[in-house]
Length: 240
Image 1 (cartoon, rainbow, N blue to C red):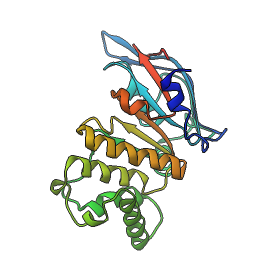
Image 2: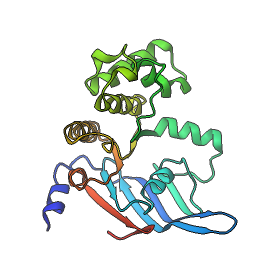
Image 3: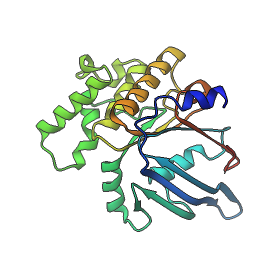
């Protein structure tokens, strides 16, 4: 067993036998009038509940496309996507939006915070689409900010925060609705190594303590080695 395999097999007692994400023969083709590009080629992948999976590969290999399909932000050209045992191809746009809001949390490289809203209001945003009171939204948002160590920044605006703090806010927004799955696209890509390690530690603790299933796209081998399993893509194909 390699050193990477040994590291990725530690601290995995909370991984369940239940399959949280199942991709079956996924293909994604982008077409224009003159060009057809095969972005993903027959990807089949099972991700267990409570697993922390990383996806690596060169730029343009299909990593973000695969993550978007897992997150139901894009539909495959061919193949089947099941999230928590539910087939998603039969859901209409309204049902998809509700399903994403309930099951999934998203973390992006560029934070996607609204600068005109205070930190607390940014974190509350996903809860606006749920049938809960303003008082409950505030309590859930305060709890989420507490988990990422930003209780003292709730009344700040994003422009008053460092890059690492902005990403913590983005994580709080992703977890405020207590999703079963977090999808993270290069969550440390815009940060220096110290801030990147802090963000990675937050994700590891979320996975370990709350058994949140996490799928992370990364270019950083060091970050990938801290997850349970590594999937590599090359030219739209799974190669490892």
